[in-house]
Length: 466
Image (cartoon, rainbow, N blue to C red):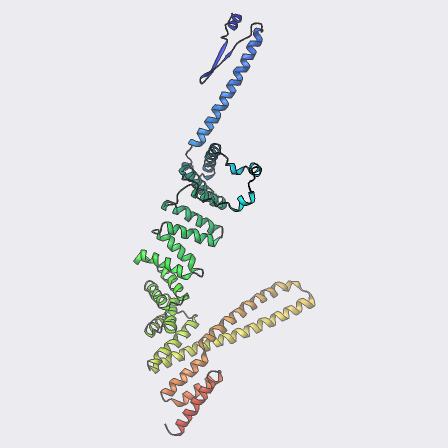
């Protein structure tokens, strides 16, 4: 029966689409060989079908998986694998569909007599935008998000760039530019960070948080005017809900560019919320006196500050008393003026005593260091080295403190205070006290010629019985 079936030419049939494959056994071929070939054919066809099915299954699985769910679960590595497989599939299809431009075939061009050097020099820059492709835009955007959360910032930057090449940039893309700004900030590329942050602001100017971040970043640099532009935008958008610290930032920026009136205005806005900030009360009073010439504001701020300074804040106390003395002296309120000048002198003397004590302390430390150094060199007793090192550190700290005290004492300008006190005594006809204080001014090296002339005039008044 098997031999008859083979003659009929209908031994086995496989169908693939519209084509068919007829496998027949030649008439004189042994039956056992015919069965062997049939099995081999069956096996090969089965393997081929399974391979095709597996490839299709894998493609459908990777393309159909929900990588968004994995991103939400913070499984960025698994999500990235799916995204990358879809990107590979998309780019593979695009490369198959596209024809290679004839101009790429350099050898043919040479044969045709084309000047490749001229072709290269006259080439035209291709635009950054390639095409509007939502699929590739979304895939690159999500790939960048995955890399960003995997702390692979350079890879994230590249994918964000690729995402922007496949879309017409609109308001929706402000978040990409902001993400790029943050990535460049983490990569410590400040200029790029500021550029992309500004791009995000320009695309979506109604997002005032971009203005705030720009303002704070620019305020640390030299571009104070641009910082103020963005800072004022944010402050106006917030109104009464503006954090008070931003008023202080604005005041500092205005002071840096020499706009002292606006600086004073913002200091006052800050102090409306934090009236107990002694340092800012002093800053406003000093600014009002030295730059704005608003004596009323200066007097109020410095007087408030005097009630807030702690015992160790000697320099602010001394300068405040000195300025208040100047203001009240202009108003001919000599009693209050003299009282403030004398308090400033007391603070200066206290600082001077601290300077002398510090110098004595330094001399004592140096003496100990010399003793230990001699022992180390003579007896080579290395057990003393830790003490020597400790004393050297202590010496450095004391010398630094001494420089600070000298600087503070110089700010009070005691010689000038002596002269002002002498002038008040002279104006109130207390001539002997005036002479004493003019002599102190001369001894300090301040206004020597003027003080000497004042003394001569006073002595002449005394001799004439005034």
